[in-house]
Structures are given as structure tokens and as C-alpha cells.
Image (cartoon, rainbow, N blue to C red; front, side, top):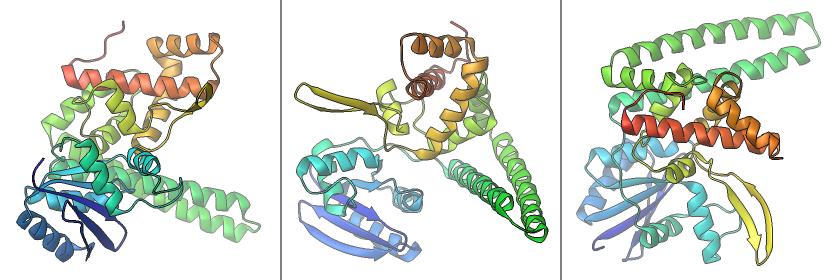
Length: 310
């Protein structure tokens, strides 16, 4: 591949950039002016591939800003980049990934840039993320209320929980309006919700945070959600399989949907019971159900077919 490859390390206030093959490194501010300057520089360098690591939402505005300028941006799975860094011997398990490692990962793997969701999809992603934050605040405040020693403190936490619950209801109404405002989004949500166990929150999380759904194969979509099993092994020794990385919001939504589906979806309930009968631990079985559910949803979006009991 000719042209410049750019690895971008995203933090709260700064973007560290490394360009290959030139080996140039520089930084810009993570704000509108910094992203605009970066886009102009990468366009002048004829960048052919730009990679940013998924960092809990900090990368969204960066990827969207560069993509809006017609630049080929890939949002990378942090677990894959970290495994690549460890293979190079450059990073321990807990060390941060830098822009040079990201650039070298791009150079070695040449991932295919995919179009980012449009403005409405990004709005939905922001609403879903905000809804999750409000729920976390409600849970935290309820825990404080249970630990409160005085009636006055308990009343304070109750008032705040009530206010947060009102805000959560308002957020749900905004989500409804956003989904109803787009026939395409509404059709996809109805398709996903045709599966027993998949509710509105799960469907909207998938639509907002996994726009690639329906365009990947089952292994790729599982890896993107952080549901692909990894196994530690050395020679003849094999350790336990585990899951890591991926998109935490998507994975959490799928876990909740899997818990419901194990009770109310006859296909997934039977699948879960077969795993238990085979001696699989409960947690391993739940992860397998979540992975199978994601595979089913991915195929449904790909084929535009509603749920059909096999």
C-alpha cells in the first residue's frame, strides 16, 4: 500500500500521531481546531489508512471529524492492538498503547476502512451513552442511600434518585423520537426486537454502537463485541478461555438480553441447558448464549429476515 499510514493515540485532551513510513511523530489538541489541523495535514500527506483505538468514547469525535473530511479511518479493537504490542515485546499487559504501535498494527494487518454511521446514528449513540450514565448514577445513589446513617441523608438520596429517574424517562422519550424519526432505524429495531429476549434498550445499543452489524461474519462480530473466546496456552499446556476487549456497552447489553433469552427464548434456552448438561460452568454458558444471540442478530440484519424459531 502506497501513501501514509497514521496511528493516533487518543487521550482526553490530546492526540498523539505517528506517521509511517516517514517515522514522523507530533501531537495536536483534541478539540475542533486540533482535529481540523490534523485532517488537513493527513490529507496533504495523502494518508491511505488512519487508525484510532477505541477508548471509551474519546475516539468518536476524532474518527467522525476525520471521516467527515473524506479520510479513511478505522476504529480499532484495543484487545487486538494490545496483543500485537505484546507480540512485538513492546508492552506489558497493563502498559498504554502508543501511536507508533497503532501505526505498525495498521501496517501489518491492513484493516479495511468501513463507513462510520451518519449524523443520526451518532446522535443515537450519544443518547444511548447518556442513558447508561444516568442508570449508573441511579445505582450509585441508591447504594449511598442504603449506607446512609441518618434519615436526612436517606431523604437526600431519595430526592436525587427521583430526579434522575425523571431524566431517564425523558432520555427514553428522546430515544423513541429519534428511532421513530427514521424509517430505516425503526425497521432495524423492529427486526432485532422480533427475537424473544431482545428489548428496546438492547436493540438501540446495537444500532448505535455497532453499525457494522450485518456486514461482518460471526467471528468478526463476536470479536468486535468482546465475546470471542481467547485461550492461554503454551506447548501442551492450555489455560482457561476468557473474553476481553471489544465494545463494553454492546457486551453489557447482550449479557442482559442473554439472561432474559435463557428464560423466554426456546432456542436459546435449549442451547443453554445443553451446555449445562455437558458440564459447562454457568458463566461460560451465559457468555456462549450472548455470543450465539449476537450471531443470530447479525445474520438477521444481513439477510433482512425477522426471527424464526428453528
